[in-house]
Length: 549
Image 1 (cartoon, rainbow, N blue to C red):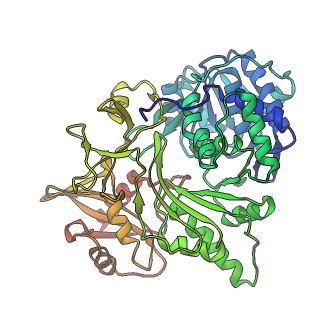
Image 2: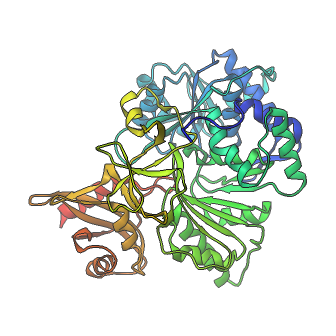
């Protein structure tokens, strides 16, 4: 595949309208205790579309979304699609300067935000001059000066008429990455169809629809046959993963279930699984798996039990899901397929590890590369043959974004053309063996150079997590007069542990020179709400701790 779109070239608004027409009373989304049918979602989005249009939004308008999980988030995304506008995600953990950076970088003209985040919006306003419309979602906080209530403009607006749209319409997904400022990844709707809907159809053995009406008909048929997924996404909507999963689930006649709390609550997740007969769980590595399994342990120790028999699949992406956590899931969910996947906001998947029911999981971080994944030499920009020991950057062909918003240099670096094939190359280094086994080494931007030796954090992190007391770990390089950088492990543990014991565990599986020289113990390894590592935090924490010693 060359990176061109596959399948139907339509706006997601047009496809979602077809879904609403085909199954208006079917549940589209559940957010905590709020349940929204397709009829309700479509009408609410149409009303918000009118309100946005009345305030000047139209084709290409960037609409920033600064919200926790809520039905208004999904509804305003749909409204933007209806207008052919572009939704822009903003991390609710960001402070005012970071909010201002994204809104100014994107040229956002509208911001939809929860009231509890209003003070940050007010502080950011002087630095985001393009923002002219403030729409506040009511969560008990007073109305910000100059803002309008979301529920009031929805109720006072008539539903927008349906219009002709294009698969060239866009969604912008800001990704923080591991270093530097967030970057806006620009996805066309037609490429999202190829990456998400096309994959959903072909995986299920369903004929790919060729018209919006067929999309609705296929979804209704799958739902009537009991073949539709009920997808629960543990990460929040603002990270994009949940919206992408919603796209894949919706076209299969499915529903999407999201946590209603403002921080991850394992018991809430299991409550939702039971209440809505969830069939698929999506999470991000051990950062989610450990508390989920711990919650089940606590329930069992208290003499309780849960009915989790509906769960057929667990999918992890974005961080390593360890073998011990897979085994813990297998004890409670013996009929679930476990899929460990390496993906990115820029595309993928780059590697997969599938654990079938009743089989022993592979070792932690052992993956296989799909046929359309290669490693690319960063200097020569050529494909490295499988079986080579030379590390290269993982590259994946197929449907992918157009590039980064207003950053031609970074776009050319990440979306590379090699021998006429376009690959998305986010910067993860690995080797691929002849049998397709992938050895992940980590992101090149956080690669540690110690005395001329290149050391990739993920390889060391996986080795450190083999220690029975290590809960989570990040590896960074800190300055060293002789070697330039030395490896430092920042980790949390379940019980008091000696640093030398952890270092010895690392040396059991990887070369001694890659092992950490220092270990910094913390109460909890900080991760973003979607479970991804924050290496800036880890480096600052390590530097501060070592300076204090």
